[in-house]
Image 1 (cartoon, rainbow, N blue to C red):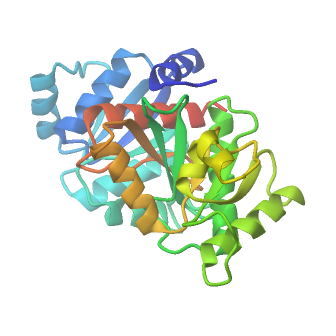
Image 2 (cartoon, one colour):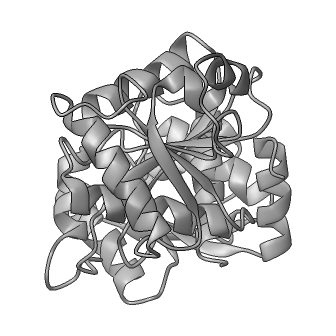
Length: 300
């Protein structure tokens, strides 16, 4: 059982180094995370961006550039494009967003000529290590899909199950979250939850256990579930929380980060390669943990 990010770092070190392409790399927190990952011997970075700025920041933080490739490109859009091309041409394994807007990097990812599209739903998964829970768990989707329909939710589950497998979780337990644990025709999230659970039972969603609907307390607390008479192997032992929409996902993500002080990571799935797409508000540690996820996904 993976209980912490320390466990994930150890697992990534066992898998061996992967090549990380950083788009618009002249950003101190990003380069600090890159340095930490280099020091852990899990990546070989390729830094795309303004060479002089990258060198100045690297000198400040003690990042040795002697064996690191830098591709000089001052224009942010072109740098994002070149970084994406490195991954699509298989010269790098993982793409990471640097000092560039998410919309710009995602435009390159979705580009038909040089992008990383697969036809699958592209979704965001956040991984959390919270002191009050007995293992790491996932929250999806907090950043990409605004109001996913039933089929999109199915693919979001499948993306997160793929990540779980790469972390050694053989049969992840998925809790489909709503505001209540009973199906109500007035609440679409509860209807979707029942349909997704049925899909899982009918082997349309494989290699995991999907149950729902769950209110959040019943998903993460066996005692809360038992108090309401819910009998479930998922309740209190959830690996993946599937949120009903982006608002719920985003609020939970930020609540866990800023109120609970949890350790976290985020990754974009459903593309040809993992995409480390962190927020400027994310800590250097969160950026490092996100790189770790990317490394593990390429090692499955």
